[in-house]
Each structure stands twice: as C-alpha cells, then as structure tokens.
Picture: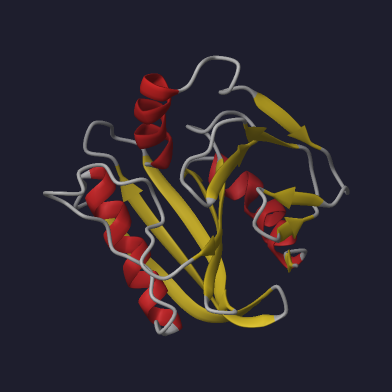
Length: 195
C-alpha cells in the first residue's frame, strides 16, 4: 500500500536523483533518518532516497512492490504515520503518547484503510514484544489493494519510547516473498536501538 501512495507522491514531488537507492550493507550499523533509531541489517537492503513521510523511510531488497521494510521513528503527539492523502475529507489517525500498545495496532489499521481506500485489510496475531530494549507490540496483518489482486502479508514491531512511537514494518506478497524474507526482518528488528 505504502509503495502505491508513495509512488504517486514521488511522481509529483521528487526528481529521479532524489528517488534513487542507497545500499545498506550487511552487518553495518545504519542510522534510520536523523531520528535516533539505528539497526544492523543481517543482509543487504536498499534505502529509498526519498522519504515516505516526515519521520519515515523505506528499504527494499527487490523493489517496494516485492518487499517493503518501513521505519517510523520518533512519531510525536498529533502526527500521522503516512503523509496525508486527503486531510479534509479522510484525515489519518494521529498518534498520542497516551496510547496503549493495542491502540498502535488500531491506528496502523485505520491509517492503511484510509490511505489506500481499501476495506480488504485484516489484523492477525497481536502479542507483546521487546523493541529497542523496551516493552512493545508485534502484530501481523494482510491486505489486498482494491486495484490489484495480490494478497500481501505484513508484520510490524514497535514501542512507545520517551513519548514517541517507533515502529518497523515488513510487507511483501503472500506468495513467496513474504516467507522468504520474514526471518531477515525479525533479525533486523532485534538490533534496533534508540539514541
């Protein structure tokens, strides 16, 4: 979903030079944006040069339509996960530092449904997790874009740390790509550090 919304925004606002990729090499600590989150990728990823949101960026292995690793780092009170698509008629849910961990899941689902205009979105397992050494949440999800027939699976892990939301998501087509790279995503999440 993000890659479709992002592609539309990118086509309107970015030149080819800013839309390029940068290698995020295996085993090297990588800062995510300038927001105090860093990870150590267990395999080579490619970071998209343009941002998908104010406090967000995406990495991929084979292209965003095949595997999308997205980071949401330091989301503050009153901010959204994605860039607004239609703020007046369909505003996205906003983060609050007073949210409980299950509220993050609902915010994520609401954001997807609004930004993509799809009703074909479901949340799977929701469970406690550790994120950057703090209590957090991990949840699975799946969706189908209304303009395509490819089912996509996803997993997200994150926490509210010092009043800000940190979340890493991975999604890919349910056939082949999701299962192929989910273990690499989980290893990467284990390395997340704040500060």
